[in-house]
Image (tube, rainbow, N blue to C red):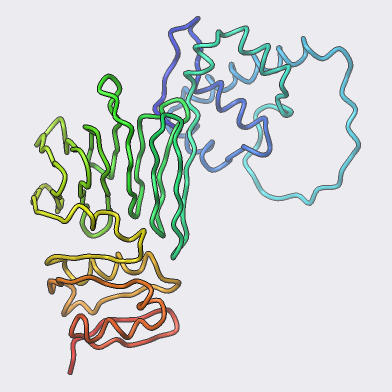
Length: 315
């Protein structure tokens, strides 16, 4: 869920209401996340009870006749005990609830969702404000329909193409690193190192701390609390969408991590050479056909195993 909040409109607890609605709909129910939310604060259970009771009252008021449902045999499976036997909330129920709590409060309630990619997969996610996020393989971005100008990159790599709005800046959270768009196309990579590279416009990195501005053709690598600025070719930013990865002094361990996002099986690096810097451009299609091409390119030995490939020092 996005941040916990109660709408000032009529004192509506939009977070608890959203949970009650989600858990009443079998298609949306997420028991693991719901249990985490309940356990995060002792008061959450009481808030959920109130919201669920409100929905039950509304449901009973709208139901002129009892609903008859044919029995269906369902194999039992373990799950947390449901606090209320709510059914799916239909269109009439939603309309009544919107009228009861106000349109603005309904629209402002958290509406989180996440998009993930598998290894070797890329996916473009259009956003309602005209921006878009393109995910590399093994990546996850967390979004909220109620906050279209905010994204959380949970893992992997993503290219953000942002429609600039000075009054409502687009923000990205990548681990502990906060980014603010200044009219931008930029790439964010997480892993052994967090790296931000700008193709167009500008990005403000860590606005409440270092407040480092990156313009087109600039990048920053974050290693712990240290930020290192460098130059990049703007056309190489997000080059993975065209099947190439460019590196300039990047440790082999990080290179292998990046390459692995685009392969069916991972590439790992022997500890003895993990910190060795690599400069060059990798053709991802060639690597997909035969990962052994990384050997002469990186001056390493490529050992194949059942689970993937390992880069080792040449003997």
